[in-house]
Length: 157
Length: 390
Image (cartoon, rainbow over all chains, first blue to last red; front, side, top):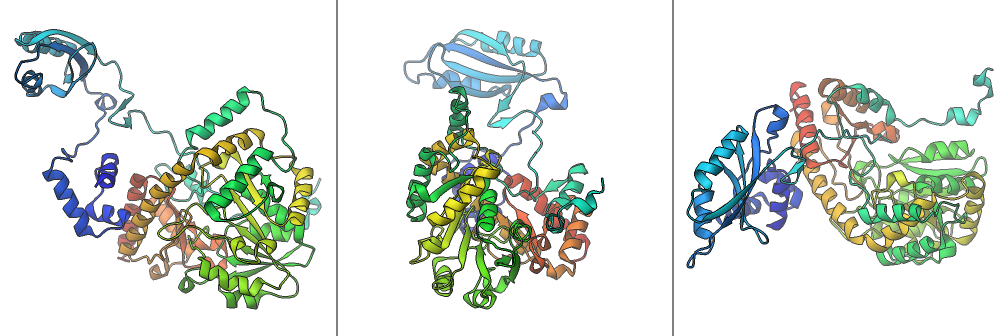
């Protein structure tokens, strides 16, 4: 299972047949493992890595640090659930150290993000403070380098 | 000056490598996908690169002894014992500029004009030209797909004459990926014992064997070490091609003469590379395994894809090449490669580059990422479809 997930994490377009050949296992076994992975939530989905910056679209990304008030009964989960439900939020993590939650969000402009923070995040009862950091450039994301690939300079000998 | 009359006849008659030709064209083409390289796509493990850098920082920039750093030769002996069950002392090991220098030295050390060198083909492109340059006579033995591209005892027996000096034994094989297992080697050893034939066992791909027990060296069989020169190196196993570092080990009288030649024409292998290689041997067994696992997955992927396309692919057990048969297309290897290159911009090497008996096959390297192989095989598939061959 671990090996299948590692391969798919690198390249989601490998078919069950390809995986079966690569791992020297029957296709049925691989298909069953893939089903199991989906059922049990080991695989959370298949997406494409898009470099919007390269395409030239106007997108702005920000990393926002939040200090929040944990609840006696549910700790950080309640406020995290509320924030995670916003469509603008790309990722949300509970972090150790100087602040509690880190969220990454995407918008069409700086203003859009600013408004989101001012109008939707800050007013939440349990949010104590926010610090917004705008992303200036992405070098690497989700394990992929966001640069034009270096040409293969190997010679054929 | 008219060099056509000045250049050495033997040098002029050396067979040029047939691999390059296509790739010079490919290099000029936009969006061309190559499956032609003969070197790993991995980077040298970081620990090794760091050891090279450290040796430079410490100013270790002088020559080493001709035979190679003692420290490195000691590590090579330990490595050969640990991974190949071979017993050598550091005096029997010399460090060379890649495995290719060791091939050159061994042939030059043994061959008198007219002596014969048995070369099982298809094989790596340098044995034949070095033999002719030395005045030796190459005796090619065509290997057959039905024997898994292995050299058989009968073929060997038939090729040996009173003038035979060297048997080239290049397994795991570039270009076929064939491997000689212990039982196959034992058959050859029976023929060789009692003769004066030296085996040049080119084991540069020894770390890259798949799906069965580890590589077996013919030198590990009884009475064979005394008649075998084992050649290996760092290029393929440790992804260190550009460091130019290999080694040869064998009977001391042969090594001594090889060192003498090496002293005159090379002096010593690159010092930085030698220090880096010590770290490779000490710390990188795990990385070798990881790279091997990756190659193995790609190998199985390619074998499956070629078989699906109807280009029968004998299962290669070593190196990083598959050698599919393209006879079903009705084209010669050369035509196939040319049309594939111009039609679909995929570059593979015609089997004939590795000897005439490579006709009907092409060499495909899998020292590439899976994504690269996916795209390339997709193009080959559509090439076959357009030709009405699938």
